[in-house]
Length: 207
Image (cartoon, rainbow, N blue to C red; front, side, top):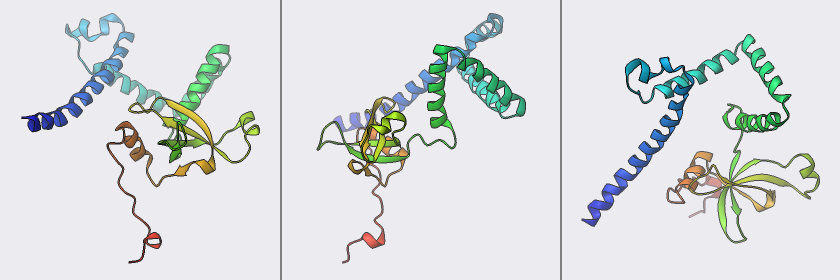
């Protein structure tokens, strides 16, 4: 009985969690329907709510904004809009910071996580997965002696929170592992181990 119960859990738990996450995402995106006039909302037109309609509207809006921003007029509109936002003191700080992060994360040329690393954290002798995000800049660089790298150490199982560290390059180990594989390793709390990298012929021990 116990064997069958565990087998059922292994099948149903990932499915239920996946459906729950999708439900949260769709429910959140469906809130975009509240932006429509009340007489245009599904409840007024159909007499009932239609789950997923707001998600389609949100995705369509994102697509149209991206399409319009790619042409000449759209570029000028976006530039003018950003110019207005940058003239507002508090909004400027928030918008500029968020835009830099989003450009890094979502741009096709972005390099948010450059390499997967193995670092000692939170103490010497304790190792964890981290990601190289760049090198220190600005006045920070003037106060660091030697070659340093910027490192993001994600938390488990939620990698969207974590710690930003600046560590000597000599103290980090670059892993032969893709960013996706490293993220899966972190999210699974080490259960889903990445595939073992093939050893180059020159490094194989002679028989």
